[in-house]
Every structure is written in structure tokens, then in C-alpha cells.
Length: 140
Length: 123
Image: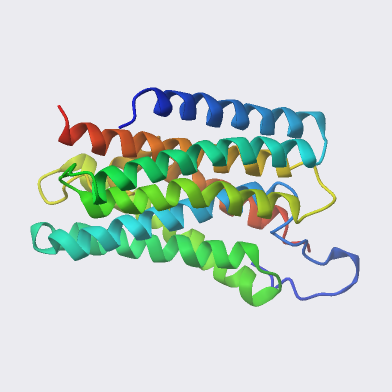
């Protein structure tokens, strides 16, 4: 992937304008709900399923970083958004597949369990839209 | 939770979500109209939150997941004002309405979770 640092009229467009704002709003809501949920789970019943709750917290952090990356401007924030949304996609696919194969190890308690079925599969669609938007706005 | 009020809140957030979409479809930037809409829904949410918080903290209702309930209560009143601020600070595009739609749906889901948590204690 070429570094979008060339000047002139092919500069990257900001990810935070136009439909990007709708995307950021969805990311912000997921950041808030995943993080708050994980915080409560870890504070009240951590020993019941430590792996699942740590995973919830990790997902929350990924959503926060993606929100910050998409809402900001400049190459640094864009790189942060690429990495966070990429991790998000890998995470939802990995956790989704693991939970679909065997639910014993994971209570269906994380955002990414069963490809995000508990959240209307939005967690599966969101990183795809995010990557598409980053690609579309990157300039040449 | 507070029976009838929950239904009213569902309808209000649903209408607000639709209105945001209509605004985006029309290509119009949200203005005074959407502020009024958000204001009305927000007033309903605050009334609901005050009643629920009073009944949980002072009225003797015991919930199995009280901490979660109170967090959702705070979320239910915070999301719309923040969402609207985010929607109107970009002056030039049609997408502000859709941002309000996302915030309204998020709020509706939070209220739905509240009602579920409430029902768990009062079956």
C-alpha cells in the first residue's frame, strides 16, 4: 500500500466529514457500550469468565482507538484507524469462529461472540465499512 | 420499569430516528427542527431516568444488576445530546440527520436493555 504523502490534488480526504460522521457515531456508541460493559463485568464477576471479560475490554479499547483514528485528521490518525479497524476485523472473525465452533470456552458475553449476533451482526459489518471508508478517502 | 413511559420513549426515539433519515434523504442539514425533536425526546428520557433512579436508590426496588442498570440510565440520557452536537457541528453536509438517527437508535437500545434489567427483578 503506497504511503499517501504525495501532495497536489490527490491528497487524502478527511475521514471525519460527510458519511464518515455517521460511521464515527456508530463507532463511538460501540466504544462506549463495550467499554462500560467490560468495566462492569470485570468489577463484579471477573472470576466467572476472565478470558471473555478481558476480551470484552480489549474490544472496547479497539473501538475507542478506531473512533479516535477516524475522527482525527492527518496521517498518524489515519494509520491508527487502519490498524484499529484491521484488528477489529481479525478479532470479530477469530472470536466469531471460535465461539461458533465451541461455545464451552466462551460464554456468549463478548461483543464479538458468534460474529456479533447479540448486537445484530453490526460488529461484523462495521469493520468492513470502516476499511472501505478508509480506502475511499485515502487519495492517491 | 415505568410501563407506559417506556412505550412512549420507544415511539419517540423511533420517530426521531426516522426523521433524521428523512432529513438526510432530502439532503438538508439538520437545524432548529432537529434540536426541538431531540429536546422533546431528551425531556422524556430525563423524566424516566429520574423516576427510575429514585425507585432504585430511594424507593426500595432491588435489582440483580444495579450497577449495570445505573450505567445504562446515564448512557440513555447522554447519547442524544452528544450525538446532536456532533451532527450540527459540521455545517455543510446532509449527513447530520443520519448521525442523529444513529444516536436515537443507540438510545432506544439502551432503554430496551434498561427495561430488560428492570423486568428481571419484577417478574
